Length: 76
Image 1: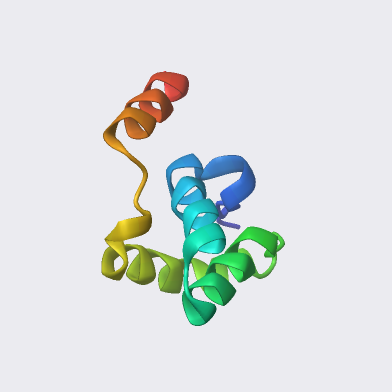
Image 2: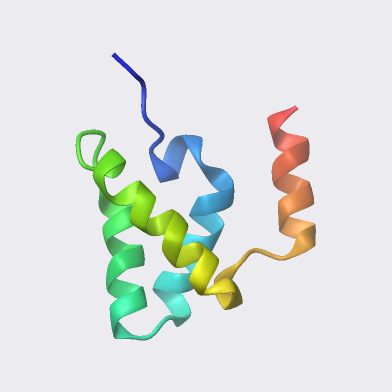
């Protein structure tokens, strides 16, 4: 069985986008971000492709270069 990412644990760069979209997004963006933040192991794989598309569309919630650099350093 393939192991899927869960934003809170394994997907820190997406988590930063989700947190910003949940806090600052409009109604629809906020609802999608919230769903990604609360999704469990069984349901996260269903919503993750949508989250990736939303992230590409709504770049305003993208983490800063500084945050991305910090995330990369943590992964080493």
